[in-house]
Amino acid sequence: MKIPPFVLASASPARHRLLQTVGIEPIVRPSDFDESKIQLADPAQLVQILAQSKAETVASEFSSALIMGCDSVLAVNGEIYGKPANPQEACDRWQKMQGYFGDLYTGHAFIDNSQKRTLVKCQITRVYFASMSDDAIKAYVATGEPLKCAGCFALEGRGGLFVEKIEGCHSNVIGLSLPLLRQMLAELGYKVTDFWE
Image (cartoon, rainbow, N blue to C red):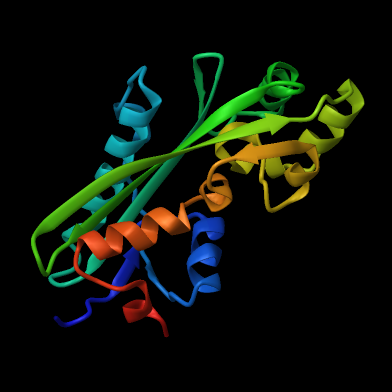
């Protein structure tokens, strides 16, 4: 089977870096899909629909390619969090999250144009947050990092200082699950090593 180009339908630098780290140099085509069109209370369903919608938005640009879309949210106490809208929202969120835990959901969608197949799955990782003072929360939010991330923190950045432990796939928290990536590629008939540069 001919190996198609690997396309990442995401503007996330963290997802791009994760793929590069494991030897995959994707074509990056950020999706312009309007996420606000999808409102669902079930976080697993939400991220899978968003991931698929992002991949579908980009898929028409390629006749033969493997397009990956991803989307992440953090659920804390039944509330779903995407990226915070502003610093105040980020501070309010950290007040609820600190000393507690959340479940990070990442939807992964593959559209394989060459095989006319679509595969969509979700990975869930539980994240335990450290207890933090108001000053620490303000200082972290002031860095701007939480404003760029679903869940209001970057595990691979300064936010990693405020995570006590993780149950499940750690790369899922950064933006995509590498084990799930490998499994989904296998389900589509590829080896992950097929995409090594």
